Amino acid sequence: TQVTSTLLYLDDVSVSFDGFKAINGLSLAIEPGEMRAIIGPNGAGKTTMMDIITGKTRPDTGDVLFEGQMDLTQHDETEIAQAGIGRKFQKPTVFESQTVRENLELALSGNRGVWASLFYRESEADAARIEEILQTVRLQQRANELASDLSHGQKQWLEIGMLLAQDPKLLLVDEPVAGMTDAETVETAKLLREISKTHSVIVVEHDMGFIRDLDVKVTVLAEGSVLAEGSLDHVSAHPDVIESYLGR
Ligand code: ADP
Image 1 (cartoon, helix red, strand yellow):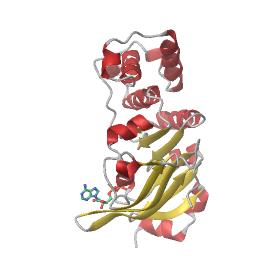
Image 2: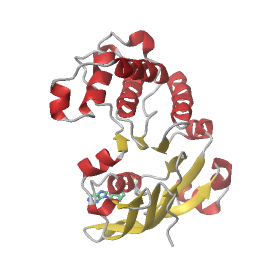
Image 3: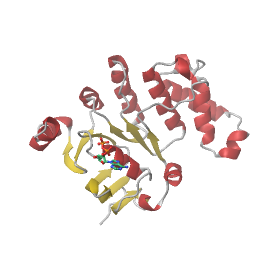
Image 4: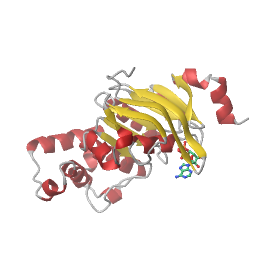
């Protein structure tokens, strides 16, 4: 029986591409307020899992339940985003010719639909929300600069900010620290820990130092299903995990 308080529940999900099972009996439960790290070797199915959660890929079998009742396999990407699942892809996609603040304003107004965003006038509440987000993503001092002038790491933070502006219940964050400096990587772990106080988060990442800093439960995927789950120390001591990373 399904526990309805679970925020996201994947139950025995499988999907094949040309006869190859990219996801093979994957089950996963994310609780409200939880931040979960997903790791696994290349080809483990991490991207495909995110695609299934966001409605980009429809599984062949299995259930994907959001908030205990919404069956995500029956909805498209737009509906799933509107239900409160936001995704940040690996490559930042900010509006380079707009300022940092304008990028956040666009994300906030876009949330209200095309017509509302055309006639958008920023309210005090919105202005306060934008200040709050600027602070969270460490861009207060850069608010009036063009996004094109930000470092790669700062662009990633801006995009996380744009995601926050849409106020999702669950954030999916794909390799946030790829290409970041060490200092930015450390800061990103802090930033995500702050965000996780008010949002549920799934982070896919390869950087083990970063995963350690996150200090959250880790799920190891391999060959399309869960190989191990628990603290980073627990999963890294698991013989199958060592084997899947070091090869046979
Ligand atoms: P990861 O993100 O963990 O590296 P992926 O989810 O990208 O893994 O891929 C899992 C497996 O599924 C890989 O073997 C990949 O080649 C395959 N795959 C993913 N998407 C497709 C697709 N659209 N068509 C065919 N094969 C795919």
